[in-house]
Length: 542
Image (cartoon, rainbow, N blue to C red; front, side):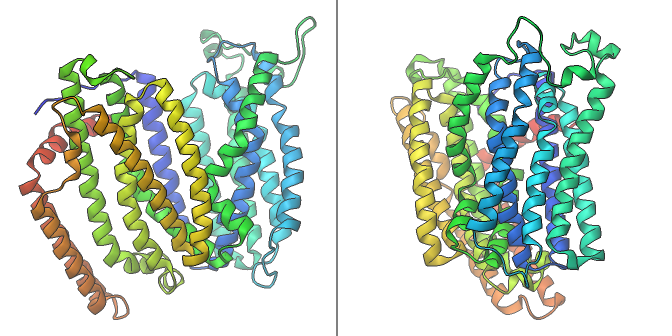
């Protein structure tokens, strides 16, 4: 087999990738454990209000207030008049106040208000979440400075400490004062943003004027330089950046709606009750953890590989044939890898969703629509896996013009997803959101498959063969699906822990059989994982 050689990244890039990945993993693990613990003390309706309604208020406020400024001020690296940039960034705070005033009115008077007997303190909680967003905006000039000058560890440490403080406070208050309800999560959000701001300010108080700052030729000299100021004879702000900010600002509305589409549909169209929203959000978080932990690192790593090996926008016949051959073989192996993993998750997810939710959240999750949601999400993970790899290759091979056209396709698909999710949710409840995601992801996969097919059409390589698993593997998966489904019906999940362990043992035996079948039938894939994938990730994490 041809051995792909990935050009090494710079040390700073490796630090950013490792730090960002570790931070993401830690955040999700902490959130996972926090939800598992708090579900024992709060209702699913409360979780729905916090994780969907109030979190949407917070994310909308901070996104509309700062996203355009971030994108504009970080363009061009450090080549700016930083006094003017700082002045421009402080405008995020008054803009945030304006957005907070508008959004709080919408959240209090235009949206459905939870029953105060079931979920008290909704009004104060809306105000406190808005206040937390405004508090976070206080650190915006420092955040942009840190990002522009590659202070990677500052962001990692600040967000990690803030998340730990938020988790600890939530657990303490949920145990000691569960009657406080929404006040608990509001206080935790204020502590989170407060720790963020504190970490950034403490760091820059120590850094400015230090020997390290002088060695790095840092553009600011003292704390006063972090505050709005003017110099006679020059504009207060950089008007070129201001106009660029306005351009990004006009795009930010649509981007936010598409990013948080599901939550906006749930919040503004009342397609699910607060309890159903809470269960859906928890299941969505559980399912997405698998995708992010397993598939996202693979996608990120091999996007860099494809981008280095292929010449963007050029016909396959006009490129170095050895490198095209390597790219085709790697793509085939990656497609086979994510297909096998996705099929395993789909098959075993069906029979073990009920048990997983019962262990994680008790009867609160396992007694209602939760198991059906997680079973559907297990199938959706398969589509996520395939789409991640196909788009990874497509985006690395497309020309700039093709990427621009595809962005229009993505826009149309995103809008259609919002319409589909609304219609399907009225019909099927929370499962409708997952079905809409499946349809949207299926269309994206078809687009990518057509592109890959055309790309290699005039060559000898057919990497899409990676989507054809061996018949013996399909047979092993089918037998596992039948056996685990029968096991669930007989042993799970009301007969006590002994029968649950029997059900787990049946699944473990079936999984072992599937893995042995993979080793015997997918030898090319096994060699790729052993010689390419595992050594690469071993080096990354040492």
